Image (tube, rainbow, N blue to C red; front, side, top):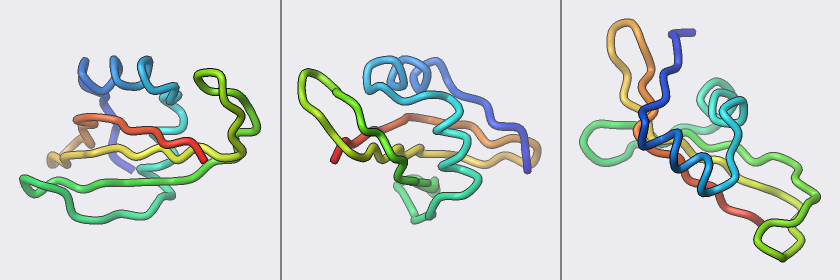
Length: 84
């Protein structure tokens, strides 16, 4: 697999939305892919969570990464996290 590089924006979104860099990498490597705007791809994967996020308990967390592939790297543009 190509090297995964998170943009400064993606790192900030990880912190804001409770996503770990390892979850982002796993979503890219093993998650589903679908087309996104501007020729990019959206990679998403659902993880067991069993924790509390912003005062509410959730069983699962879905991490999605919008990526852009270059010849040598996978650049993560932004990260989204949903809790279920």
